[in-house]
Image: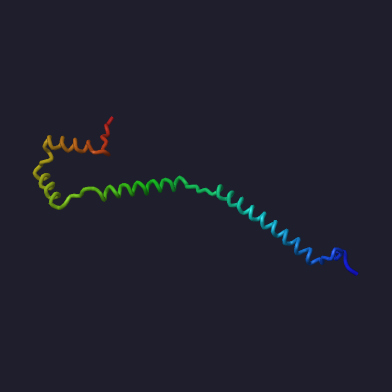
Length: 119
């Protein structure tokens, strides 16, 4: 005697495999949709937090690099120029009132020079 599953002439293994394939296909489609939505959700949630200490260190690093570039571009004196300045100091050239005023004016004209007033 045949079981009820064979009533239509289709065996139980055929029925299950057809049903399983349809179920697998449907679940794969659902999974594909989920993975896209998960990617979208993940992309919107990505963030980075930088502590205030790290920001301060970054600002210090930027300032140090700027000052280092300024030092590299600064005009340096050669030995002859240094010897000339030493001889002028020995001759008391820089104690002349006109020379002192000229030096002060040139220093005050520098872009980063600020005169602090005493109270």
